[in-house]
Length: 410
Image 1 (cartoon, rainbow, N blue to C red):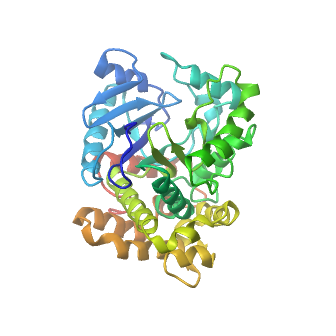
Image 2: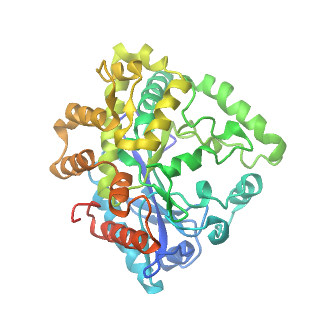
């Protein structure tokens, strides 16, 4: 996103991460740098592709596709991301590899298979690895989708941050896609977020409780969140390499350097069509709450503790999680407990008037069938063999290439 302040809901930035795997075994292939070299002729960390850009991540088997600056609408993005996915898959074919979607590799051993990005100025990655040890599921086996929402001034920041905090615990009910780790069912529909919660236990202030604290001005955010975080890092990071706002690992983080809030709790889906439909429903719901003057005080009063309780239920049960917090539900117009999937269906009914047919069909399928994590469990079960997992995740790779939803043809 640009450093220039943009009014809220006037622009968006979207990032999607994918892993590279072998076509036959589906084991991870650490060759992101080689893919980039086919475009630029060098081991660059970013590739400019006009409307989109490709960039490296912490590990060599993951690459990120992102909007190349802010875009004024989410509507065209699915086709743009899909075209680049197919371009990358064509390049990967010469290595017998392809992109795999979903938020975690189901059997990767990150302690043995992790290769950190080795090129250029990798000082940040080395600092993270030295401090936290990045060979684990929460670091080297996770793929997420991020959405950046701009704000212009403290008034918009405060209201936007308050609305995002309220919606954030519910987001995995739409996007959870990581029920398997180490070749086994984890008992969670979103194991990525469970491992993510514990990534930085050595310095707990890095991720806090994932739910952002109720801070609604730039000054309060800097003084009450970032300054203590930097102070906690300082003894372990004397060069100050990590003392930047992006080290904050909460589920949504303020990026004052570009005047956006970056939402980070979304698991990546089976294809960009699904990602963008989920993002659009989430953003429309956030906007509805943020613009409602009558809700401002109630939104800002929500504590970390009560939102965390909802969040933990949703990462475990996803679509079927029962939301019992009546104060939270009242913000959406409801006065009795309901399942998270039902709440999202009601949100969609309120915001879908301007949606195109493809986006509406896509989100309707997800609301009917549940997030990708539920559909993976339905197909592979809770005690899958390696071959069963391999067959299911091969189907996921096909969904990514073909822009189809997992379960449409099953």
